[in-house]
Image 1 (cartoon, rainbow, N blue to C red):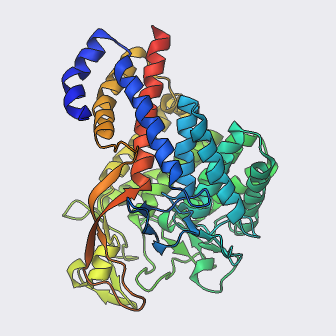
Image 2 (spheres, helix red, strand yellow; image 1 turned 45 degrees about the horizontal axis):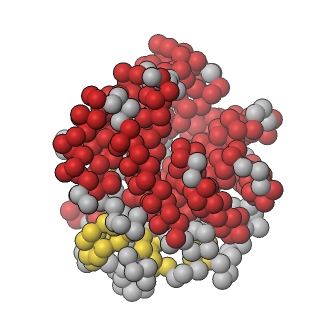
Image 3 (cartoon, rainbow, N blue to C red; image 1 turned 90 degrees about the vertical axis):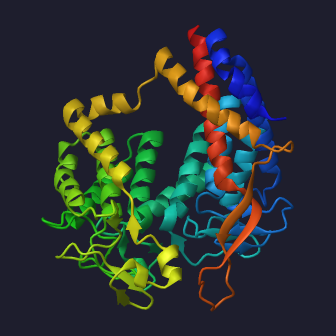
Length: 461
């Protein structure tokens, strides 16, 4: 059935005649239930990877995965688990809750002796070698377990959550940062690492723990240590940003052979928002003091093409481009295709910077309580109706793209070819239909928001 043609013609009429959009809401609920049921059916040991083919024969995460391996890194198991939990909270669908519990159980089974996770769990052999704070891996798992721990009573989940939070405290460096990997590896993985939001996601986890579990001296001490590190790791004017990683002497340092010591715009804008997030909870005006210089520097170094260099040379503000192994290139075009297309040497942070600056100005104007109220305000009826109008078209597209089975399949998905070990990627792509965890998570979020706002309209009438 082509939902798009049907609903596009009547959507506005639905809103005009029936303010709560009841017909579309009911179909959205049906779509959500079908989507959850299907995606739950393709789990492996309760967990998920990034992609599977419609016949379920090929599974991808960081590379091709077998049926005994699940992904922890988003948009894998914790992110899918959060989507299931959100679906349950909105719809009270018991299948969604069971799916969330099973995803959590998979993470509990895969939790290593340190209390954390790497980017994957292989149930044939649980790795107890290390914990990774890269790419929101360990952090996303803890966030999901904490959220589910608020919803249900389960001793195994509560115990795993406590063990994971204890890990966060143990792994935190004396200077207040978190490393790339724990325990010590004897190389750059031991460095304080902002890259890919590592420290930012750790701070987020501790703020969530502060919110969920109330006053804790350990959590409060951890946050204070993290704040101190953010302060002392900001570079001095005129380059008032932050580096991707710092050695034990608080110097910007090499990580991989294409990640040089430098000042990093993307890291800087993430740190601005982390400072504001901390300000929202703790209310300390000093948290805002590093921000103006950072914003000024970011505006000063915007490139002519409207983007920012990922790596900015210390002292010169010149863009840095490095190929393997530590081969400096003068321009982006001089890089090997594997580096040029496989790594963001230029980033577009214009929208993020604008939003961050707006948050900062609001913080100055409203104070932390006023900013909290502004960012957590409940929409009035008129605002809800405007938002529903925006969401309705997205909901229609989601339903129109859904298979009768409940699956959302990305047709002719184009992606980098997985190369044999030792062979460098040189521009090869594959095209294939795939089922995506990220698409599932996004669609569930939109459907849930639409249903929840529609319910609010009903309650207001």
